[in-house]
Length: 164
Image 1 (cartoon, rainbow, N blue to C red):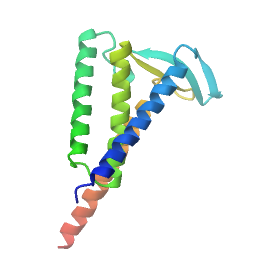
Image 2 (cartoon, rainbow, N blue to C red):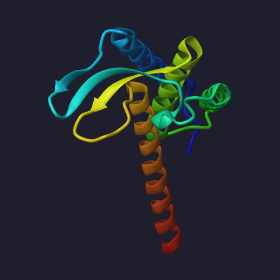
Image 3 (spheres, rainbow, N blue to C red):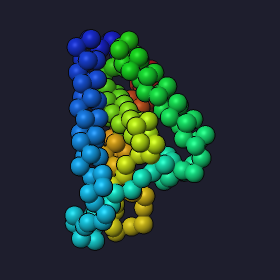
């Protein structure tokens, strides 16, 4: 795969920055304003929560774990930006996935550093599930997109190798 042009890499970073800005804006509007409101009765609601841990509030009571999570997240996000700028990530799907993952990781990291917790606010009312945020959706969609792309390209590569 050819190395993506610098313009493409910068557009990817700009897209990630726009997603971070969107998440930061949503969190600023939600913070303190919502105690619990159904947007779609029985399906989707808003409920402000402070997540001091990681996914599903794991390690929420440990300051050492929060520090470790923050440092690891910062290192992974920095590595992602460097890989992107060096052109190690290429193609529309991987670049889109990278933008989503970077945006979600950076925005949740900004919460951890500024507030000591991550603001979560999206609640699924039809199932007992963790309350989450737009950044979490970005990360999840990015990971699923990247995993699907890897599986698809590896499947095609395997089929090509078998034919030869």
